[in-house]
Image (cartoon, rainbow, N blue to C red):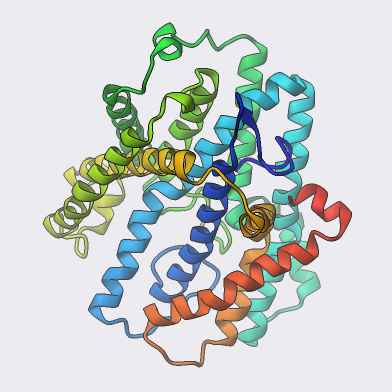
Length: 398
């Protein structure tokens, strides 16, 4: 996720074009992150601090699944693409040592703060509502001394992964590992369909190989509450982070036309939805769920191909459409952009507190999810806004 280390408003220039659209995509994806965690809360499918089991009608369950599968396929990869796009310019401007120091401060401090403070607070809120809090001090001492906190990054797994990606890139650049970008990329007048298909193919192959070792949906190292880092989904994150770097170094944004991106988005949606239904029905996901997560199964192969196709197609379409249609920033979008990273960092305890406080209200789970979202999102953005009034917090959480 591009942070204020690149620019306080993430308004980098590409020639005479201000990249407000990157800001707009970023805050929209973070809204989707909050909605995803509400989706998990009320569907009970996925990893989160608190889930609310209840009877879910078939249609609601299907809509939960559609939001979960389709959003998971692209939204975090798109954030890694945006982050990757800003890395080369920041590294060129700051130099290796200053860039690394900056990354450690801008990504490491929020991640460590989450591990040491926000995650324990979130667990305390859950325990308080469930009347099940042991001695907080003794628990916290064990939490630190056992190094359990290192695997409790919660949603900040993104910042931790981005920190690792950025440091690896900086070190590889420092030792001149990266060759110059191919001339055909720099000199091309437009992005080719063959390039898009190639990225999809690489992403699918990498996803399948990773899931042979670490199935999708399984947290890395342990299953402790708050460990949401799932390496099985990292293919799109790694590939799109690299694609973002290539886009910057080869000036490919200027070669991405609105028509090209829109066509890919439409094609992806037209083919993606029926393909997904065919996959889950034909593969019998209810009985063979593990086969979709990874292994030498045709469902794992098909799932990796579908996710890669949907991820690249939707991401390409969103970037193209936002670049050409939403490259502006008014007062509202600026407010959302300024506070988006704060929402990402601090939303977990807010979401947990509100959903648990409303747990006795009986509604259709899908209706309840979006009704609660209407309350949760303004509270999250307001909390970020007022907290960032404190200068030292704004420095690290902006």
